[in-house]
Length: 450
Ligand code: SF4
Image (cartoon, rainbow, N blue to C red; front, side, top):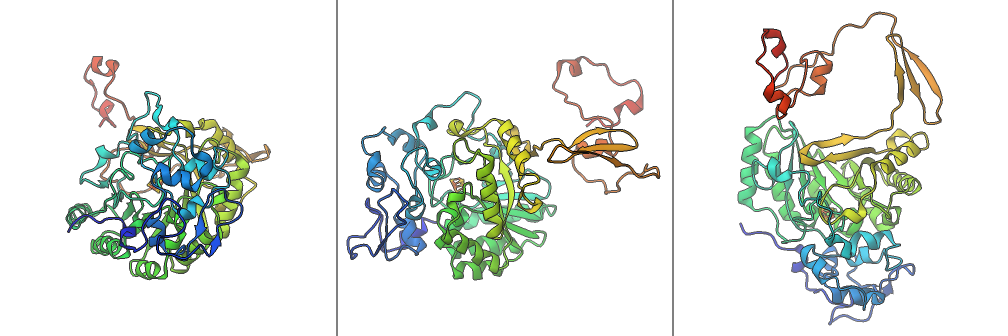
């Protein structure tokens, strides 16, 4: 089977610089919200996701046509050559001011700063390529795998962690590659949770996405399928009844979406989430902390409250990855901590995401939290609450010597095994001291070495 091309290509309406009317169309029937600075009109096919795909802003000329104020500004061709631009007319219509004071503008319009990288940034800081036993599939955690089903998105986020692939070619998974992935999953039944990601999998045609879902469902050990998508944010009209009916056939299917700012919470995005939730799809949100966009506790609070109203559970708030082209978006870790400190107590636990660093070198997601344990003795733990109140929590009177009894797993030991007393140490071997050390003289000293 050949590679899948953009679904928007199927539509009769081709992209044009004015974003508004195809050559053969009558004048616009309604304008976009008066708050937008974009010269975007609500074409009669505005609610057709294929029309939106076909009319994405993709070139400097189209960008200047949509935002005349930008014409004569810096030449962005070099940035767009390295990191492609695409903005759906819908998402462009959410821009209120065509400058960097606008969060939507910052997230989708290329900036010259994307080409100025400090040396510690890399194209693939999570080292996904090194955890790919099959091309296009990342296997990092014991029970989970991630499938890169497409390199296409409807809108290319300037802060994307997969800037190295998103939009560089707009292709989707082939049947042959899918078979290789299914074979790997069958050989590794410990993988029970598969995440379909990209690019944005919901930019694929419903038929193509169904091919992926149905093949994964044929692997008996795959229990949960998750889809990572920004479609409800940037192309909400893609969430059609047809798509929802198809998803229903492959439950349990979860969707994680990617709202970053309350300005993205619109009637259209709420409707997309409603349709998914009504189709029995649990919804989570993964946001990224971005300098000048959402690195303010009150913005995150507003975002989280709005998401819960839309039946979307705030799941993760990511620290920006060390990926090339995003330095201008990075915030210090302390900013995330401040935000978490602010949220606790103001919002219910349901509305508070976990702040995580997706660690470089494939270290995986590491939660970063304010400390609520102030001190500990064998009889009491001293806790603090969000107000600064200190509380002594007494331990059980009866001695509590037994350990948790989880079965041994066939995986490398982690901190849990140290706490359970199963290993005495986890030790790096690539140190000068380690190379210098003599062999153990007693057998019990080797306990825990691996
Ligand atoms: S939609 Fe997701 S994969 Fe696509 S550019 Fe945005 S963050 Fe990257």
